[in-house]
Length: 311
Image (tube, rainbow, N blue to C red):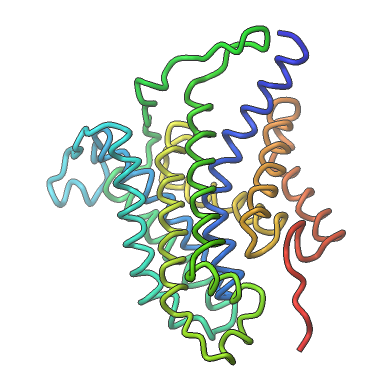
């Protein structure tokens, strides 16, 4: 393959991996920037998206201890990937509304450590419940038939249709959320709260409902990421934790509360991770932490984050 083909291949692989992190990071970033709420349970939405998507698109085999107690052997609607991609974000949106109302809201005024403990605990509970029913084995989330082939880009080489599909789906979702936040009243309240939440409260603006909706939108994105990320990463109960760390680093690098920042941060984290996996696999995890450390040293608020003014 030519040098140009190698570069294009690297870019496509980077964009495909980055897409998953970006979708998860956007909801995490907005929640942290607007509500000052550290929501590690956001990764549970990704985890739920993977397994609910599997059950909708294909069929799940239950092999865990609780599956035997309840007499469950298998379950699945076998409606296909597109049905999962449409239904899962809606389910995740509803779960996000419930999480905001009954779990997040009581902890808004609590210390960060309390928020981390309760949300990470929820992630672990969801993880272990899935293990108890489905088992701890790796499950294959098959790619849809329409994206199982390859697309030729002429002299630049031939590339996976699925990776190109992931990039396209992510671009549509991110652009839709960006336009929603940028050009609607809900988005205006959220953006104002992100830049100066205290001033929004002093002006008497009730931001509870917009925050609730944005919490749900972020959860929906994480659920969609689970569906499109299922065929990319190994499907195991621990995948939620595996995605949480890079997504959180994306927020740190890009800047809290910034959707463009999440995109830029996701691309940088993905490029470092993919590049090191191709050339020095043992350093791939270390590399993304090193990138985050360098960015924080040079720009403590992240590449596109807003520096808060001391009160």
